[in-house]
Image (cartoon, rainbow, N blue to C red):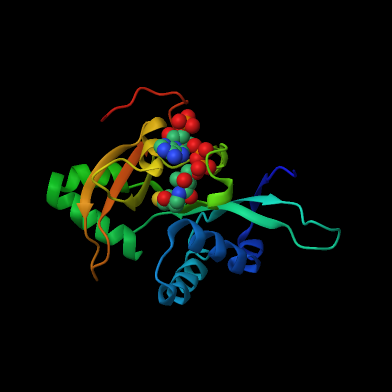
Amino acid sequence: MREPRLREIDRRAFLRRLRPVLEVYAAAMRPPADQLPGRHTIMDRHASYPGFRALVAERRGPLPGLPPAVRGFAYGFHGERGQWWHDVVRGALVQVGGEEHAAGWLDDPFEVAELHVHPDAQGQGLGRALLTGLCAGRTERTVVLSTLHRADDTPARRLYRSVGMVDLLTDFEFPGGGPRYAVMGGRLPLAPYPAASINS
Ligand SMILES: CC(C)(COP(=O)(O)OP(=O)(O)OC[C@H]1O[C@@H](n2cnc3c(N)ncnc32)[C@H](O)[C@@H]1OP(=O)(O)O)[C@@H](O)C(=O)NCCC(=O)NCCS
């Protein structure tokens, strides 16, 4: 069995892999199929944001010459005003905690937009390696992201808490409807694992 290898890829290499990346996204998140073209557009746009960084977990192709198989990926960028997610979350944080609270989390953030591992490859440490690799060496003050909100815990939220991230918003509905999200944040560098869980 060939082990997936973690690689940092630049914007162009990321855009070249959008199809296999979206396949991993679809397998991990199981969104309605009609949402996938929109997700493609969003990822394409994100790749142009400042400080974009992407990691993929890839397994070599089964035969020489065949492309590697993407088993997981993660990417993020420097968040700033004018970006849709950033502006929505900043507004919500101002509402719950005031300007200073929002600024403390969002004045210099690394925003992790996507982190997914194909279901066949989950539970083997790839998600943690992708997250810690993505955040390693980032110069921003904080890391922030949104993840599906569930009444019970999710693997993603456990992972984020294990590196010191806390809930900033829960049961949050982004404009336009859809499922509820939790917005989580942590200080950079990430807490070494295992870290004391702050809000469990
Ligand atoms: C969340 C996700 C990226 C984790 O990737 P993974 O490779 O399966 O995770 P790892 O094997 O690296 O495990 C990391 C941590 O995640 C949590 N975790 C992983 N699988 C879990 C499970 N089945 N139940 C509970 N916690 C779990 C644990 O905290 C684990 O740490 P531990 O092994 O020290 O207990 C992956 O499960 C996934 O893609 N899920 C579907 C899509 C998704 O929710 N993406 C996140 C969007 S924000």
